[in-house]
Image 1 (cartoon, helix red, strand yellow):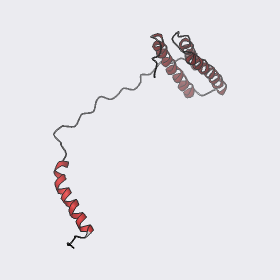
Image 2 (cartoon, rainbow, N blue to C red; image 1 turned 180 degrees about the horizontal axis):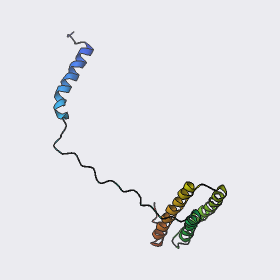
Image 3 (tube, one colour; image 1 turned 30 degrees about the vertical axis):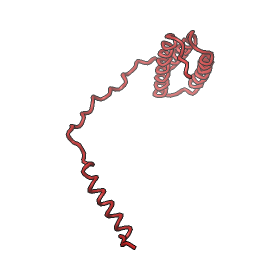
Image 4 (tube, rainbow, N blue to C red; image 1 turned 90 degrees about the horizontal axis):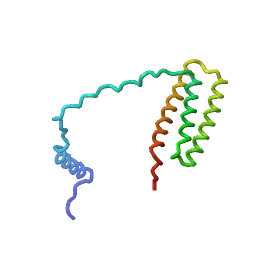
Length: 134
């Protein structure tokens, strides 16, 4: 039988050889200077908001306009009706709760943003039917 090296010693020798062979390929390339950070992203500009009732009525009007788009499918019209019913109930509950001024401002901002979103959705709907996905 031929003499063999102990297992641990042989493993260390093999790992050492691999380290010596592969180490030169692991150096970092530092020839490129680091990229400077870009300009900061500006905060959303302050929006002149009306009161909660006006902004949320604008949301309901935007939903109603979207629901009348001729290119909507029946499921989308049902969704719009359900969202309008839910929104009306939520607005009525919000009035009964009599929220403080910061909460009213947050609700008005949420209604304003949602109304803008529905206006963009209406523009998209007016452009044509939704593409079919197979």
